[in-house]
Amino acid sequence: MTTDTAPPPPPDSRPAPEPPAGKRRRRLLGGVAGWAVLLLLVAYVSVRTDAPTVREQRDVVAAMPVVNRALGRLLSGAGPEVVAEIGGQELEPGCRISPMRDGINLVGILTLRTAEADAPALLDRIAERLPADYHARVRHRPETDTHTLRADAGEFVVISGAVTDPGVVEFTAETGCRPSPDVEFANTLMGIVLNDEAVRVLTALGLSAPEFADDNPTLRCPSGGVARTTRVTVPGTPTTPLGATLGPVVGPGATVVTDQPDSYAYRTASLGVVVTLTETGTRVSTTTPCP
Image (cartoon, rainbow, N blue to C red; front, side, top):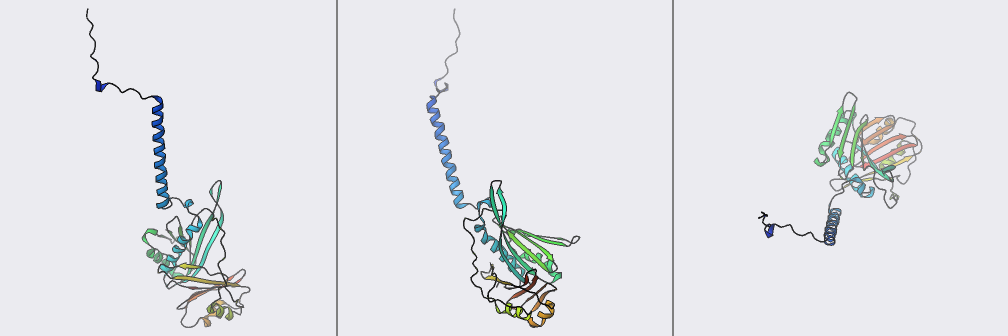
């Protein structure tokens, strides 16, 4: 009696013997370690070469030049027909980066004054003159008489602009909530002498002119020059309308842009001047434009 049996498989088709458990574990640990080293290398290269991917990766100090450059482009794009006032950069604490982490928002401010009818068109002109990568867009809503501009200055800095009053266009460039700086900001105003035009205006209004300015914010212009606002607020307000008093003072070569009961603005060949009545007194600002 014979029994049929299957021939044994060829030697090259037989399954390889299982490696010992210890050897498998060592291979697994080696692969994990290699993968970890690769991830660390990629992360190092990314940190050294890549731009930040979220705004929380840059504190407000690192964002300051971006805000300054953005406002400088706005001022330059406005052209010489406006009277500008640089508001400087303000820190707004109280925001939260996360439920457990406080932050701070940096806001740069720029105010432009022009003829009342020209304010909406000013937004259009500035949007056209901003770099293409700002992706500036303007919206006009005649039904609500609102005119706004939005743009992206890069590094997560957002530009907003709007016609806030007849002939007044206000811009902000803000960083959003960022980590607070590790160092305190110091007041860098070191006795900026009030310029002759501001002294002349205050004298004409019958108000005492101090020797030094209150603040002196600057903007870096695209051309490489600097625009600068010198501002001072003194106690008291004039007893006569601003226009009636300052009209004869500004001279034949000046152009009056705003003549309101509480504000008066004009420009000369080298300066823009804004006089504003406030709750604390009379504020005079003079601004040198972008070259």
